[in-house]
Length: 82
Image (cartoon, rainbow, N blue to C red; front, side, top):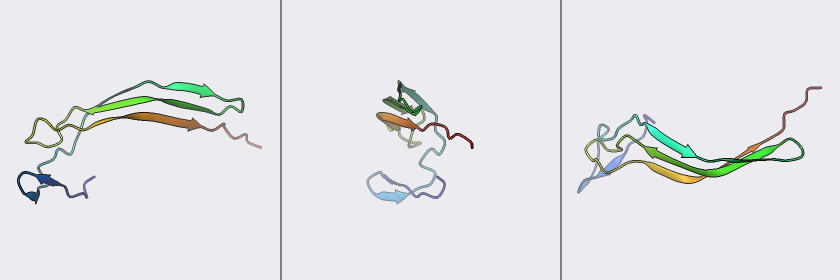
């Protein structure tokens, strides 16, 4: 998002647009279980994990973005053309 302004704590708050990496590479893994219903709709649910391989702050080697959660999707049946 090119329009955000971020503040980084380094003893005092300051704005520095060049302090953060703007391009990131993520590794994502997950498992999904699929269930179908009688009316041809279905849903999937399962754990999801994502780890950012790029550093968040350019001058700090210890800050990375990480996400873990549950992913769920609902699929509706296709409409029949009349």
